[in-house]
Length: 370
Image 1 (cartoon, one colour):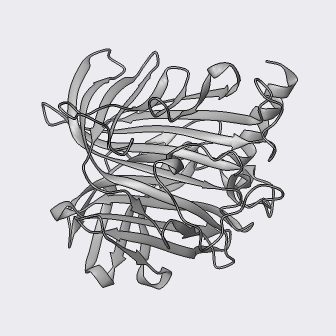
Image 2: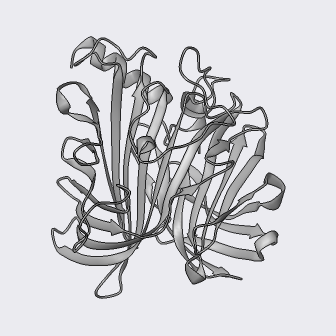
């Protein structure tokens, strides 16, 4: 690996997007994983802007940070439960796009994970846009990839033409000890979080552009460590987010939930933590079955850890009490596998959960900065 690529990878690890190191790994006053760094000459997220589709499914190289994030709660024919994660991160090293080809200024990192009740598998890759190793294309087909790990649009059977590229997608990845090939489809609209996609992350005004497709039905196959292929079905959730400074410098990590509620409703919640204030900022979105939304203000959300698990030498909260009184939600969430630790270059916890109480169902939990 030449010095430029090695430097690029090191910078990516300091400023990687949705996944990051424990709080001792980030320099003081730079926010979790460097996400509190000043935007400098990069584009900034400004209130009053407007997302446009399908254009905003593409990459945004003028912003420093961006990711494509897919999770799924799955079940095989014997009723065994699984969780799947596929993520691609883009990191811009320079706001001018670099010099082109292998010096194009964009570094990519991909993570995949599969979780079962007693085991968790994960893998990580790095790449550059130059030479076609990684990137995003919108024509003639929508495709997001790093090597042979890919997310791409497919035409629905019997459909004469394609609608939104994210309505029907195929997600694939494979390593020596895990593989999956899944088709996700929906006829529901995209969901914009915050104010028409403008998602605040602190009272100081740090923000990102953030939208989701939370209504996928999923079918496909998994191959786990034993090499056996399993047919699975379930539900999926895709997140898209980009920014140049999404966190305040003091914020050390976050706890993020995506919940599949009864009656085809959905709920996204997150808590951003500071070193001495775990409840520094809350936000969320209640998503009705028709795709309409109700943004949730910080004072409308309560998230309390109930139990911790010793994972990778640290205490991680894995059982939670969640309350959103304005929608009469009062639940307890538990993991399928409390040891769903992503021991990647920048480690974090990510895995499927189940919940019960006023509502019952399943979802996904991501926790960073522990």
